[in-house]
Amino acid sequence: MNNNKENRNPWQFVPTQYFAEGIPWVIVNQLSTALYKSLEVSNLFIGFTSFLYLPWSIKLFWGPFVDSIATKRKWVLWMQISMAICFGILALTLNLSGFIIISLIIFTAIAFLSATHDIATDGFYLHALEKKEQAFFTGIRSTFYRVAMIFSGGVLLAVVGWLAGENNANIKLGWSTAFIIAGVVFLLLYLYHTYILPYPQTDLPVKDKTDSVPYKLIFKEYFTQNKIAVILAYILLYRFGEALLLKMAQPFFLDKPEAGGLGLGLSEVGIYYGTVGIVSLLAGGIIGGWLVKKYGLKKLVWFLALSMNIPTVLFVYMAAAKPLYMMSIDFSWLFGAGTILKFHPIIQICIIVEQLGYGLGFTAYMVYLLYISKGKFKTSHYAISTGIMAFGMMLPGFISGAIQEQVGYLWFFSISVLMTIPGMLTLIFLPLDFNND
Image 1 (cartoon, one colour):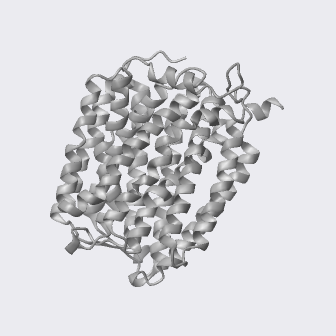
Image 2 (cartoon, one colour):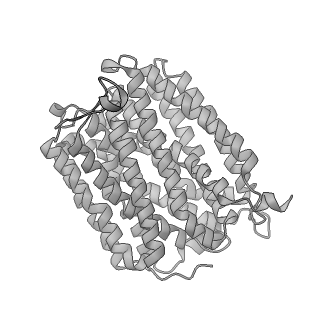
Image 3 (cartoon, helix red, strand yellow):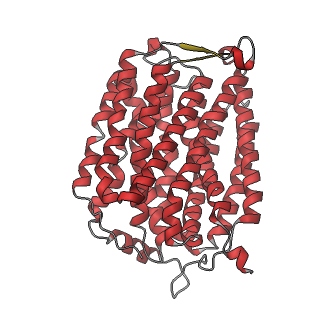
């Protein structure tokens, strides 16, 4: 094994690894919502699909297994080729009569593969980069995760809307094409990473003296941290209000005004929320990473939390006011006659502000999870933290559809705003002094 393979430039693999990490999460947890809504499935059912968060919630239980069996590099590659196959199967089964059930099974499989891929990717990051590089690339990896969100929730959704045509006449063709594209992208990522991923000297299976997986020791070290009860409350509650809102955001945009929604098309949602919105989320993440690096998390934790939670009020405004004013910009002078861009400026501005704030607050959250991942079991500890985080997303998402159908979008988003308060209260007691090894 030569030194070059052990120490490749992180710019060669960190961006593509976190692009790969973001795609399946968005497709399973967000794009599936648009899929089912376009197939006229109820919000109650869509809310219940939050069980798809479960693999990310319980991955902490097989994090030690991933840590102990094979290298993180091998796990990354195994998961990527497996997900490429799953996306291909999803595309081929879309026209079958039992597709709703089949899709849930395949999405569940992708969720387990993706959760395992996350464990391996985050562990590989901790082994392949030095401490200073880890801090620097925190913003970069978040950036490319957001790029994956633009690709999955924006570009793919816009492609679906474009191919579906008027009144979604060819909606199944659009979705089949989107899943084929996702499969091809993962195949290319697998081939690229097979060649480019380095072989860190410390990326070895971690086992105890009996050559078994040290589950007991791993969990003991994590759950005996100082103020662990407060840390767990923070992880579970910090995003509760946002998690409640997130599952119903796309149904709100797609539902007709008479049903309380905004009546947007798939392509519009792909552009407003999945592209421009994610660019704002990306900007928030970059700014948040820079601020944390410059001033430290301790000084900014309240500012970043408020930045994430206050803008959720804008969904209450949109549900109440239905700001469907349309603006047209004529680009005929640049692209030729008839080139007119039409969009809803107020809706877009609300999405931009809300997503920018979310990006700021989420950066602080993820940096904190990195800070509490310590020692030789840091891969497993990070997996435990992100697993608990996913559980905190799953529970509010699971009940979101039932609540929305009972109270309507306006009161639902009002409840979401109120549910941001418990998470912020945990900041009063959260330990923010770190001695990282």
